[in-house]
Image 1 (cartoon, one colour):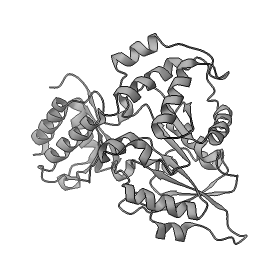
Image 2: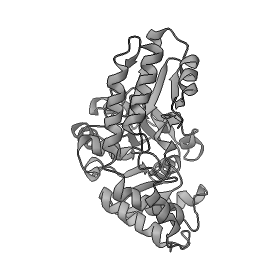
Image 3: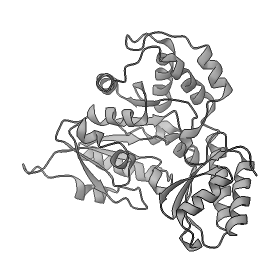
Length: 344
């Protein structure tokens, strides 16, 4: 039996690399609330340049980054347009309503994620006084609940252009935007060039222990800084947790291709088992449906856990496998051997 736990629940379970730990030990520190932590400043400047924006801000989490992105570009009572299975709508504790005073209008994405200009036409409110003002569109790239599918360049340009024509701001929940960049072979700045704001996570595929980044214009970041403070996100010697972010942007992006290869290997092997179906997989997230096995989901999950394989469930028979830093080809091979032994 595999002695080491193989945790495929999420790419948030990654541990920092030794190079990151060394960067933490040697980080130059200041007080970030006073704006003089040199390591945070370096990370923010590096991030802004990489994404082709004027400025960037370090935040504690992706949820904090998203609420900063929305609140800093809207007014209370505005309406935000987003996909019905997006992270902002499902998994951020109604922060848009509670903190931002925002109403959310959802759509059912084509292929689980896509918003087209024609759909946007139907979603944007008229100027009728009875309606809230449509002011912002958010897209999630890659889209977690759609199986980590990346938006394609034409899809992005179409919706960005349509939104701009309607004077709508655009926020990209890019928690895994670098997975999209690597999968498509397109520089990340090209994927977000027309976005007003972008959030991405350092603590997912990039393997940092803590933190996310938001980017945009200097005016936007100035507002987001105030929002971050309001949320309790103003921290002091932040260089300790910002230092791994610098390492990640230098050395962890190209490595994401390995995660994608491992996800494809996993998909191919699972497809050989009668009774299990797999969803489309283009990056590091694979959803499988075991309903054909006629096995209770709890039992399936427990049998894997007995063999030190940890996965997360979406519904009773639908499970998510996420490949990430620390999961190697041999781990995937063991998972496949186990699944074939149990259900093949």
